[in-house]
Amino acid sequence: MSADSSQTILEVDGLKVYFPIISGLMRKVRGQVRAVDGVSFDLRVGETLALVGESGCGKTTTGRAILQAVQPTGGRITFMTREGDRVSTISAARDVQSIIRQEIQLIFQDPFASLNPRMTIFDIVADPLMANRLSRGRELEERVTEMLRLVGLSPDYMRRYPHAFSGGQRQRIGIARALIMNPRLLIADEPVSALDVSVQSQILNLMQDLQEQLDLTYLFISHDLSVVQYISHRVAVMYVGKIVEIAPTDDIFSAPKHPYTQALLSSVPIPDPEVRTRGGALEGEVADPANPPSGCYFHPRCPMAEEICRETEPPFAEVSPGHFSRCHFYADLDLPGVPE
Image 1 (cartoon, rainbow, N blue to C red):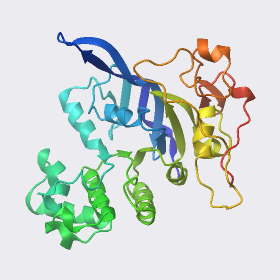
Image 2 (cartoon, rainbow, N blue to C red):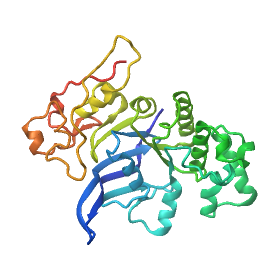
Image 3 (cartoon, helix red, strand yellow):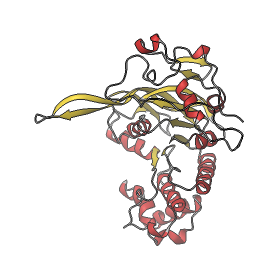
């Protein structure tokens, strides 16, 4: 895999998504859930950036905010269109929003729930083009045929319904639906987590092949670090709405510079009966995004925490070129990665 570092297709700067907590007869706002709390990253043309973390860390909400499926509370999201224009996905005019919706598409997590059981495969794949009035008739059928062949399905299947297909085939249909708009950026939200391991590898290989053929860029959301290591160029690790580390994939897996990243890596199974464990399980509960702790959000669970961690939020510092960590002691950490 190769990424074009000369062009940035997406810039996310200080993104915040807060959900109000409403209670009482008067429906008053009692607080806020900080689902995404100041997230910043960029995404280069042809790159796969993986967004990882425990359930509830805000990674899916980040993807939905980029798609404008949820309204950001603050921050900026800038997208580079096919014409080379840099536009805000938050404040763009309606005609520009239409272009953005065509060039950024989503691959859903659940291939069973994301396909309408009352629609044929032709109708499912063609729906984005019909909804945007971009194609019809013979041209539409040819476009659907092209997409099905591209994802490894026979066009003869297009008049069948989703119940006739396996999980892997359904996910291929979902990918075809996302590709029919000829997008530049795909946000893949746990695209293989609902599939068997053998089928996972087929879908991942398909995504890599499509990336090369169509010059696609991926924001790959996942909790499975084995999958992330296989497909991504860079990895961003999230904890309670914040990115705590971001680096090239090899650097993350060989030399993590945040205790939370190391804890995640220690849970990756190693196919060696002699290797029993590479670190203890994290103690305590994930911080409440409605009432996060002071200082570093991770300090209640961090075995290396000191007083400064409880009082002061660590800056997002550059460890080495392209490698950033949100830890006061990043320069002194020598954490084990995943054995080769």
